[in-house]
Figure (cartoon, rainbow, N blue to C red):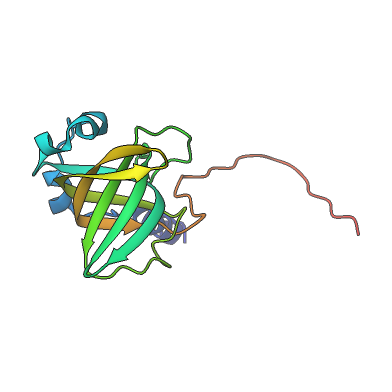
Length: 163
């Protein structure tokens, strides 16, 4: 019986640690390429592959292309964007074809392994902003409200319910 619980526990642990991105995609990522450098001159890094994530600002569909504007956020060890006010800037993901803006909605978290295509200049209120543009090799849209952090609880206590 003890071995059965151990095996089930191991299986649950392994399933909860399942990779979001393929090894093939992650091997293409340049781990020494900081987002800040790409933000300064996206054209200089054309063809480089990055792992980026953040919070969706807006999704726009134009003809056969879907543009997803993302506020960059640091990633945790699952490659999920962290809940933080820290950001180095914005980037665009250019999907070929239709991605539903109701699914890729404002506030959702997304992580992408993408190739730097170059830049696109668009207005943000009163300024012209240079966005790095990524072509996704793989992208993962995170379920709202789900944190994949390990949670451990230890304690001894008594709970009392009073009606």
